[in-house]
Length: 545
Image 1 (cartoon, helix red, strand yellow):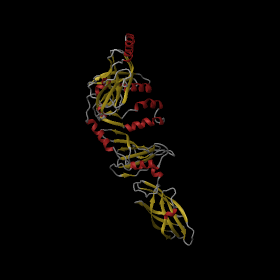
Image 2 (cartoon, one colour):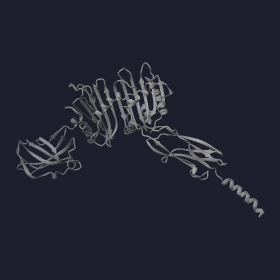
Image 3 (cartoon, helix red, strand yellow):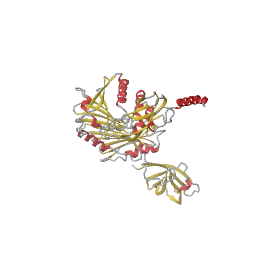
Image 4 (spheres, one colour):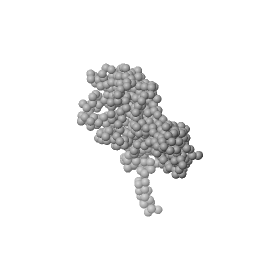
């Protein structure tokens, strides 16, 4: 037995040393008690400990939110030591989040135990709906301009920025684009006070920190003006505010997060330049009532299924409310659509403008689009309101469907007042007409309940026999299907009423929801006394407005 005793001890010692593992644990450190809103930066800290006498080499530490990894680290811990890891997280939306921290989940370097995983639940409030007027000093306003962009609008801007070099400087677009990726809403306001002072305010909903925005603004100022910026931190009303100063800016810019929004304000006061102190705690909601009520008066939704991209409101001379403008942009799978409405006292004037979409001051027709344009424009006047509507396809050339929606949009916007004459591009492209060859003509025509009623005239100098009559937009319409129940004799230089159903491109009867309808007319006739018949094709465009 003795000769086996010593080797057995050696084997036990050997396997005992190589087989022993460290003991790892992980736990969350207490989080801040400050109430969180969506987009706020959350700092998560976890403590990883190795309480064994064996080194733990190159093990994985992972922090997850809703099974999505926030951070993965590889650590090495000496015996009886610990290390703290901090992670920044920006919750995109309000709600309750389960956060999980794991260490060496595969038990590769440490023994299995329950304390290798830690969980906490974090509650995040949605952003509070606020008016941009809450971030500017109270005072009597002279002019107000507001732009609101939705998440869908920002996403579209992010997508289409590279395709708009003629609209935006490519260098500026490249700088701006990365900051748009995670934004949910952006509200921009410019305000002119009756005392001559001005303010600019921006609200941003999304996971953007004050530090990120301060750096972006400093970089943009440098790019645009070649002037450096300085950043100061101040606590005002228990809120940490970053103040950016630069010779390239007209006034200091204050940046802070509050109620789920990143807020920027610049109050241009040539005397004090004390922007942030003038802003905080001096909001009077009564100054916002008139601009917001005017915006509600203009707001409309399109008559077709689409998604709002953004809206803009401009009010000039609030002391007398002499002029107001409102616009909104939408999109669907086919294209983009915009309407813009101007309200001011109507005054008839001669149309002196050329090459522009809309002359707001004279409310006259101003459109001269290039040949083969990819957009359609419609204009309308109702009482003191001038309305302009645009549509453009997302890809390819202008289609009838996209073009028609500009017309539908403009004539669905109901404002008070008398309908006034207005000329549109669509009126020029789709004028009401009825054209037939061989000295046939249309004395009158109407389409109701998918049925065309046409008062047909003929001036051939002979009596004709009508064998067939039809109305269809089908490319391969069967002429035989338009046979009349029995031939009809039409005397020379006379007319008669014909009735026929009208068919669309798919072969179905035309619905009554159209604004204009383009189709073909088919006429099968012969000269009285002759057995030879002839089919002629005409063009018909019917407008409902």
